Amino acid sequence: MLLRRAREEYGIELKPGPMGINSRPALIGEHYARTQGLGNEYHDAVMHTYWHEAKSIDDLQLLKEIAVSVGLDGDAFLTALNQPEYEAAVDADVQLAHEYGLDAVPALIFGDKYLVMGAQPYKVLKQAVEQAQAEGL
Image 1 (cartoon, rainbow, N blue to C red):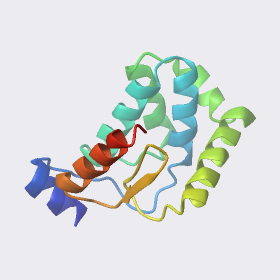
Image 2: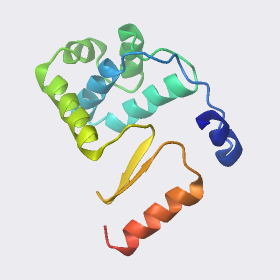
Image 3: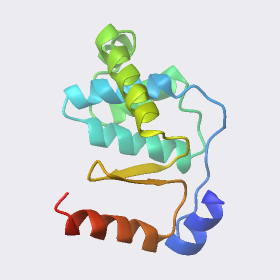
Image 4: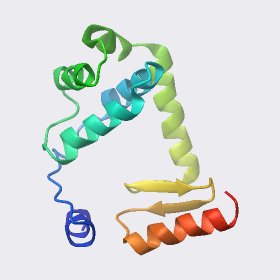
């Protein structure tokens, strides 16, 4: 459904990587990348690698290559993947997701009030944004 909706409603061809992978190292890496001022770049590169290149983002060597490609030091990146503070940050994210009741991806929260889960049409996303804006969220 997600692939069809992306193609038909947004004109995006997705070619996802393998299912059932352990994305935790990629998530830990994103927390490290944020501390280096490159969180958005790293996130975008990981998403592109998974959703457009169909690569497995649980491969540590691949994650290192992605990190280097956005300007991070590769060895420091690999070291960070085992640092307790980044592990704890991912644990906190997972806990927050549970508190929000998230059980589908993608999941977007607007104004800490409106939750939109799963592949939704543009009009649903637009409505959520407009409602949050109207409420000053």
